[in-house]
Every structure is written in structure tokens, then in C-alpha cells.
Length: 338
Image (cartoon, rainbow, N blue to C red; front, top):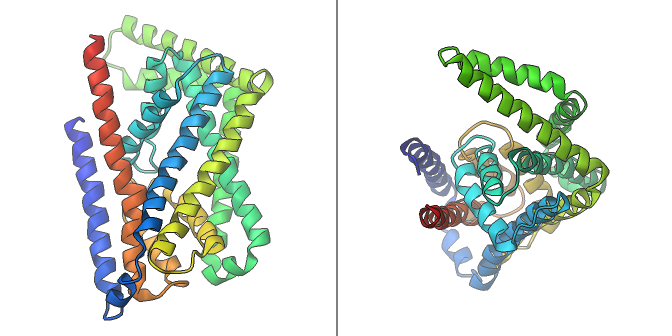
């Protein structure tokens, strides 16, 4: 890991730990020990295992979507790709750093850069559609849970719909008018490379045009001839988000609390929307404060801080550990290939 990435990791983790300490200080009282005596480690173990299952759904999504374009990606290679993406996502706002890692790893698996980019961008599109759809469904079906969370929850859903609509428009523009995208990219390249040699700039623009054509072709194939990739992609996207929501309920059971399955579903949808916004590296602080404020409406204050610590341990710190392990595997692979 480069020095700048390490620094961002320290900042992200440090900020998260600071917020968690403050939350524990404000929530721990004389009743906390009594609640801790009810802890069932089996459910906490299941929470970790369910999170790994969630990552498997993600890996299957990458594998199936790549396969629909004609590229054979092994499941364990795809899973390691997902783990590697977790580390980069933990140190970048909106977890955007994971995309370049996934593109790079697909490229190393002999997927052309344009096709790899199409797969990863289509993943983001499917995530947005799934979140907007699940939020709309839960607002219609789980009205009581939404009311208990207040007006801010509805605002977050509307923001999500606007965000998804904007992304879909940009995606549509990239598919229908690749010439416009090329002009924008070429202009950006020329602005950012004013001091470069003209031959180098021209070569970079030609490569960009080629990859835009590859990306455009891959997306057209997804829509026309590789629809199976979109079907499997959406299926595993839905399984991914549902599994991620179930993880929180397992942690609650592990702490001797009711699973709050529907409430957790709503809360985790709102948190997922919040964490897509580029506010802090890895959404540190945002996730902790958001989870505390919403779960405090449903579980005793004495245990809510402990719950949030374990929840972040499973969904954030465990991700970093998996990402570091995966990065070591990639470094070893690169060393042997030279």
C-alpha cells in the first residue's frame, strides 16, 4: 500500500474509532453489563459468516456478468477481487476507490479494459436501481417502520431516486452518444496534460477513444445479447443487499435483542444511501452516528453503543482485514509473474 493510502486508512480508522469511543461513553451505563450477560456468540459468528456470504454474492455477480460477455473468471479469483476492493473502498469517500481495483483485477484476468469498466459501472447502476427499488418497496409495505424513523428517512429515499435517475441519464448518454463522451474525455486529457509532449497526449487520447468504444460495445452487448449477465447481476445484487441487512439482525440476536428484521431492513437501506455520498473516507463517522441515532429508537440505549461497535467490526474493520489479506495475495501473485 502506498504511503498516501496508508495515511487515508489511518485517518478513516482513527475517525471511526474516535466516534465509536464517544458513542460508547454516551451510551454505556449500569445496565450495560446486565445486557452483555445475554450475549450469544453463536449468532455473532453467524453475523461474520453471513457477511462473507454477502461477499460471495458480490463475487458471483462479477463472475456471471463477466461470463455473459464471454470471459471466464474463476469464483475464487472473483472473490479475491472483491476482497481487494474492500480495502480501497474503506479509505475513499463513497467507497469509490474500490472500482479501479476491480477494473484492474478484471484486466489482469484478460478482460479488456473497456469491458472490465463496463462490468464495474454496470454493477454501480444495478446497485442504484436495487437500492431505489428496495426503498420504494419498503416504503409501501413497511410504512409503520418508516414513520418511526421520522421525515429524514423519506428525504433520504427521494435523494436516492434523484441520484439514481441522474446516474441513469449519464449512463444513457454514454451509451447513446459516445462521441460526446469522447469529446469530454479528450478535452479533460488536454487540460490535465498541457506540459506533456504532443505525441504522448495524442497516444493517450487514441487509447481513451479505443476504450470508450470497447465500453460502448460491451454495454450494448449487455443490453442486447448478454441480457443473462444483467439478470444474474440484478439477482445477486438483490441477494447482496438483503444479506447485508440480515447481518444486523443476527448481531441483535447475538446481544439478546429482538432481530428487528423489518426495522433493520429499513435502517440499513437508509445507511447504504448515506454511505454512497462522498462525505468521509469509508463513510467513517457517518455510519456510526447514523446507526446509533436510528437503532436507539428500537433497542435500549444501554446496548446500542455495543451493537454499533460490533456492527462496524463486522462490516468495516473485518472488510479492512480481508482487503489486506487479499492485497498480500495479489502482491505475491505479481511477484511470481515477473
